Image (cartoon, rainbow, N blue to C red):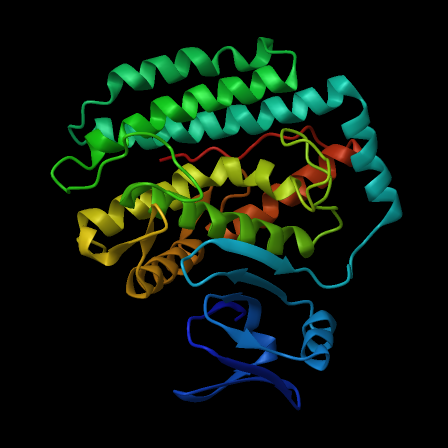
Length: 330
């Protein structure tokens, strides 16, 4: 089974026959290439061109986070499934204002539905989130009538801000507070967790897009511009509430990560290596968790659901089936 490999140690990556070798002070670690889906590097590592050629040959993406948990970039191997026809279809849907708007609306609507699922889950467990839940539902009802992308982005931002304010309610008594969304640097511990989790989510969605015919450079809610990739940001919006945010609530409620697992650096808050290791283990476990997918009537992992979301977009571009975002059923 292919898996996500996280590397926190400093060391050197090498190709050793048909195996990835990681050399560090802790010893040699051999990674059979058939079992590696993507590599996420958190430590300081060195490698040579031959190693990158090996990753490209085996279609393995590699993502870099710096020592403090900030996403730095991705080695995205040469496209193996590129399709000129599909790229043209993607561009057609981007260049047609109405077609682009409909897709952007679908991403925002899907994200809003999953946000309300999370809030309703905690409302059923006695958390006082109904006020915000109803406000978000009223805003979500406006998605279909919003006819400009910037207005749609603003609407999505308002819904997410309301949603984040309820983190304090859900996490009452934990010591973690949200206050306001802050990035680069996060100004408190909860924002540091959200930023780290979202960056992992973007990396995984990008890796799943790589396994399909779609071009990650063409997004619809997030404008295609000088940014290298944007489609993964669109798709990640749908999955962040049900994968990243719920993982954060679990890790804090079980005291697997506490306020002691953070430090202060250059005006911001950073996670300790221990906290980042716990988070990535939980994240990987969440991706492998299987749920029943009602439409196809079988159990699938969250990782597979992300890939299926990309396939749904392919069908949409080809005119086979209108795109409908994934909405959790719990």
